[in-house]
Image 1 (cartoon, rainbow, N blue to C red):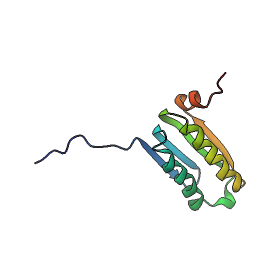
Image 2: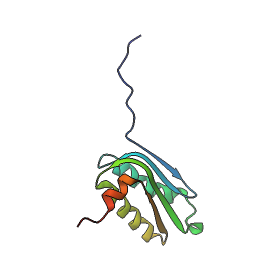
Image 3: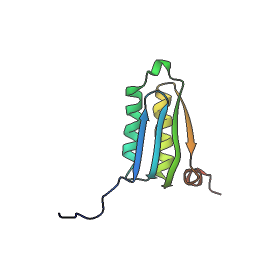
Length: 103
C-alpha cells in the first residue's frame, strides 16, 4: 500500500441552508472568498425569497480571516439589497477584529 501523504482538507466549509442562511467554518481569505460569494447567490436560488425577510450569514466559527471578511459582508449586503432582504451577520472574534473601525 502506498501512502500519498497527509490528506488535504479544505480551509473553509460553507453550509447553505435554503431556509435560514449560510454558515461558514474555517479560514475566510482571498482564496475562499469566491466560494462564499457563489454560496450567497446559491442561497437565493434555493430559498423561497417571497417568504424570506432575513439572510443570516453565520461567521461565528470562522477561525481566521483577512479583509475578505469585509468583502464577503459587502457582497452579501449587495445581493440582499437587490432582493429586498435584510442581512444578519453573526461574527466570530476574528471577523470582529477585521471589521472593527481603525483609528
